[in-house]
Length: 224
Image (tube, rainbow, N blue to C red; front, top):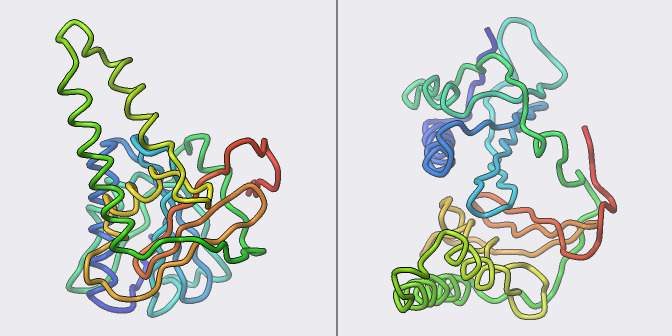
């Protein structure tokens, strides 16, 4: 049995909250865990947003039972959540599952460079609020016979695929960051937009959202 010893109760609570939010969007969600030393990265893909969410956590020590070097496994998010003990600040790594396709394609580990033009956190939250309001207004105006899933999806794609300023970051990435608890009001810390190859990453003090940049094909994909 592999036990992760998180740095403190806060790290355990934040991990549990992240897993709960992923499961809200996909009850069968899987997450890929990567750990080395005292750093843990948890990767998930909420299907509603078509982005990759990354939650980092600090570990008090790498592993139990003599395991060393590194951990890299895809597991059930629900089973991992059930194993989190916030008081003890531990989590038991469940058995591996057959990972979904996204789990085999992760952003590069390095090569990230700053991208200018990212608005402040308040402006990003306002952008998401405006998008939600527009979606509700436009879908509410549809005649009942036109309110089909295809039409709702079309309106949603139009709104959430817009870019944040000139950055090419889609607004859906910001929406995902807010929905997953990464873009908290009054959370403090700095936001950053980074690029590496075909990827953009919105980094916040509470987690990151990574997305492939449109039109760049399959360049610089890290498969591991």
